[in-house]
Structures are given as C-alpha cells and as structure tokens.
Image 1 (cartoon, helix red, strand yellow):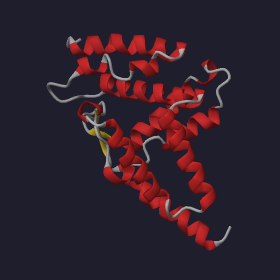
Image 2 (cartoon, rainbow, N blue to C red):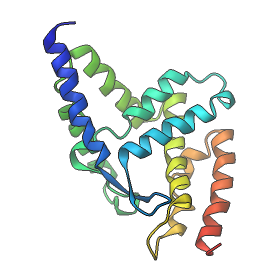
Image 3 (cartoon, rainbow, N blue to C red):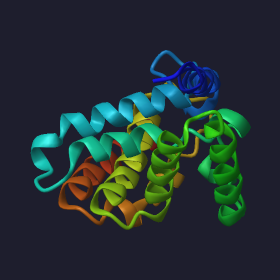
Image 4 (spheres, rainbow, N blue to C red):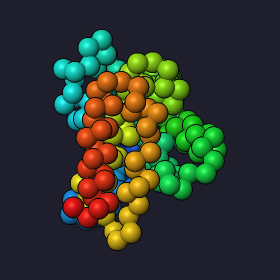
Length: 189
C-alpha cells in the first residue's frame, strides 16, 4: 500500500474521531450526554450479544453497517429524533457529510464505506433492516438506563422506530421488554 493511501486512511480516521465529541440526546447512567461513538460501540455490542439468535444474517456485514451508520454525524452532529422535521433534508445532509468525510480515502475503500451507508439508509437488505432495528433499540436501552434530565419525554420512546423493530422476531421481543422499561421509567419506578 502506498503512502498516499495510508495518509488518506489516517486522515479519514482523524476526521471520524469527531464522533467521540458528537453528543446525542441520551445520557449515560452517570448523567453525562453520550457521544455518537459510544452509541455506535454499544450498537455493535448489541448485535454481537444476539448473534446466536440471528440465523442467516451476515454478521460481518451487520457490524460494518452498525459502524458506519452514523459516521456522517462527525461533520454536522446529531439531530435528536424529536427535532427531525425534514427527514429527507437530514438524509441528504448526512449523504453530503459522508462524501466529505470519505473524500481522503482511496476509491475502493471510499466506495465500500459509502455503499454500506447507502445500504443502511435504504434498509432493504436483511442486515440493513436489522441494523436499523438494533439502532432504535440501543437508543431506547440508553434512554431507559440513562440518568436523564427532568422532563425527559419517555412517551416519545414508545413509538420511536417501531416499524423497524417490529420487522424481526428478536427485535420485536426486545422492543416489548424495553417498552415495559420505558413505561416504568415514565411512571417514576
């Protein structure tokens, strides 16, 4: 591998580091805002934890999708779901951010990363649909586990991402459990 390719990959990794400081609306169990990098890490761990319940799923592909799904947020940050009014504009901004973020990469790797992101966005493959469902579940899990600020809107969580989580028996079962936890949190239990 030539030095330009190596430098391009390092430049990409340096830019992606911004996800460590890109904050989300969820809070950790200690009460600080979680980062997009932390969310993506636990999303991958969530997929790994249930690998044995996902027959026929290409696990490597699923993990790759989980890793790249929020990469674009390194540039313009995260927009909490409750604030997303124009989803098409958000998607186009993230697509442009992904192009910008991956610009230093060699064409083969750039194509792979962008292709994975587009696959996730489309949600048309079994792995992409599952990645979307797990993404929603990880968010619910964090909202239920986190020390959230007063007035946190738990009711929003009860509908959040339901169309994705209902598509697979495992994610539907996990969703039922997390919805019970959400109702308990909303009731102050």
